[in-house]
Amino acid sequence: MTPSGRAVTGIRLWGTFLTDPCGNSPVLTRIRYTPPMNRLPVVAIVGRPNVGKSSLLNALARKRVSIVQDMPGVTRDRVSFPLPLNLGDENRPDWRYIEVVDTGGYGYHDEQGLSEHIKQQIEIAMARADVVVFVVDCDAGLTAGDQEIATLLRRTGRNTLLVANKADSEKADTSLGDFSRLGFGTPVGISAINGRNLDDLMGRLKKSYDFSAAPKDLPKPTTHIAIVGKRNAGKSTLVNAIAES
Image 1: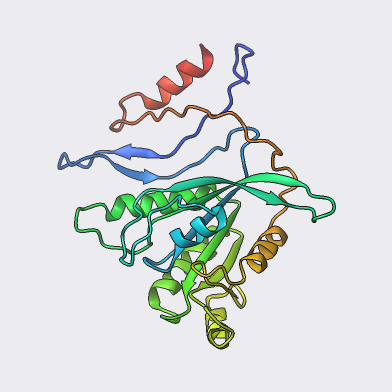
Image 2 (image 1 turned 60 degrees about the vertical axis):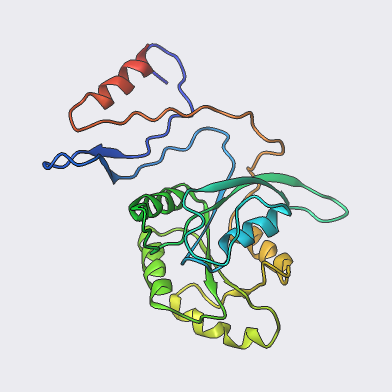
């Protein structure tokens, strides 16, 4: 509530932009997130490049939401989808909506100079998330990149669900135990392409967080305005002036 008595909702502070002494382009130096009222609970899908994050989002959405190619770096910005989630059963369904967010591959080096942008998008998704679905590659096994992401997630303290994609058969499940070294327990082995164990994944997701406050209907779309600029340009003053007007 502002001093004038007007309620202000839906304000998001994404970060602070500074210009370095050499006059280079502004860079995001600090990420903050203030969730709006009545928002959808957010589930962020993160992981190394090419582990199948976009394929998983498409499988859950049952439609092609994210572009999928057999090469890293295809997803560079966050892609979100409002997903219906049944908290009840077949006899007494209780449908709620959550927001599932696909992100770019953490640690990907982009030749067009977007590596830092991709990293920032992933960190923003993590900051927003109520649950992080951490996807690893069952075929590739445990990697240094997986361990780096696990360290970041432990530092942020996010509620994390570990998922091993490309586990196409029960034989592949025998290698899942190695991923428990990441500190998030034994992952659920799935195949996003073949649809294997997706029901098991959704069951674990519903147990990982209390989604009972999620809306039963999709909220109306909202408009978000980002205020950016160099240091001491008056960004905070402008936000305060808008809030008090």
